[in-house]
Amino acid sequence: MVPNTRVWDAGVVGGELEHARDAKMGPQWRPEKDTCPMRIAVIGTGALGSALARGWRQAAHDVVLASRDPQSRRAVDLGVELGVGVGAVAEAVRNADVAALATPWSAIETSIGTCGDLGGKVLLDATNPLKPGLAGLALGFETSGGERVATLARGARVVKIFNTIGASHMANASGETMFYAGDDAAAKGVAAGLARDLGFTPVDVGALREARLLEPLAMLWITLAYKQGLGPEISLQLVRP
Ligand SMILES: NC(=O)c1ccc[n+]([C@@H]2O[C@H](COP(=O)([O-])OP(=O)(O)OC[C@H]3O[C@@H](n4cnc5c(N)ncnc54)[C@H](OP(=O)(O)O)[C@@H]3O)[C@@H](O)[C@H]2O)c1
Image (cartoon, rainbow, N blue to C red; front, side, top):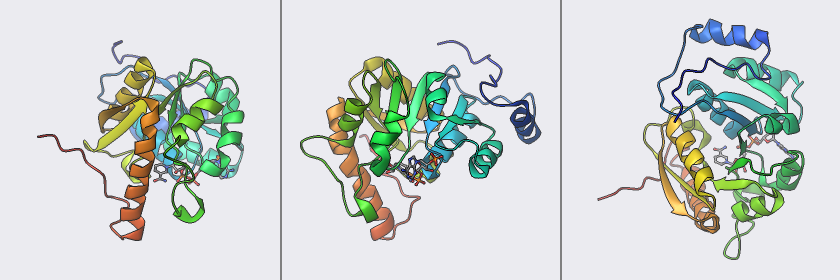
């Protein structure tokens, strides 16, 4: 692993944003972590996308929020607040080592369609195939959202991850379990490292088809958090003997 010596690479971040970052954290600011900085495109600027971007930014990764409307006041302000770049989806993905998908299931085909060529990219699928109104999963048993994503994102090295816990954990985790599944061992290594950088304890669940287990697990989390009223701060923990 390359030592973490690289200074923040501005990427598509303008000088204005770099100044905003320096004003917040100081120009000498460096996080403590042991993975080398990666260029990450986070697709979707909502609750999950912004939390992932914040967490990876804190871990000194080179993050770009990929938005359908990167010029919008909301997207620009969010980029300044988080100290990350904001860009159009295809451009952000093209320049990234890793893309993280954080868009609604209802928009999955369009979201992946706007990414452009995903061949060879590590694609972290954090989506859940939810029915409207959190009424359950739109698919399962015979396939999963993760497998559907892999079919749509031709050639991408898909890892299902970041879907079984609430967004509020992403920027301040402290050892919570992060389950993940995928068919590409190297991509899974990258995903596990990025989970660790956020403060999670990654747990390998196996091949991508095991997303069929992880998506119902997300539904369990949603049911406990929202229907049973335990709140979004809960997490599902693997306890080893
Ligand atoms: N929130 C959580 O705690 C959580 C946890 C785990 C997994 N997830 C999963 O992560 C995904 C995103 O959840 P979220 O809570 O972040 O959703 P959200 O707050 O609604 O944000 C979704 C983002 O996706 C982008 N987007 C692209 N196409 C869209 C469309 N047709 N309609 C609406 N937004 C669209 C938007 O960003 P732009 O407008 O900038 O393109 C939007 O801000 C979902 O699949 C969810 O199941 C969420």
